[in-house]
Image (cartoon, rainbow, N blue to C red; front, side, top):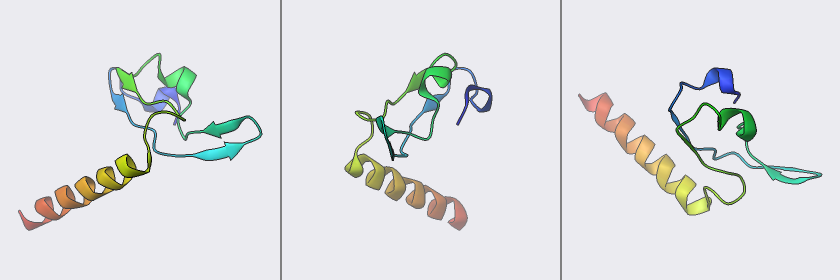
Length: 69
């Protein structure tokens, strides 16, 4: 995810984790996006496994609720 993909002031939650020679990195270009986003989570140190699980659970629950309406 790059800065041009993010609406100014948006909240960006980077849940991706990739291991590189330099350590862990996320799916978001942190340095570029932080200039545009209102809030952004770092990788590592931002979102952990339990947060990802709960985010997925809440997203699924919302999708099911909207499907019923």
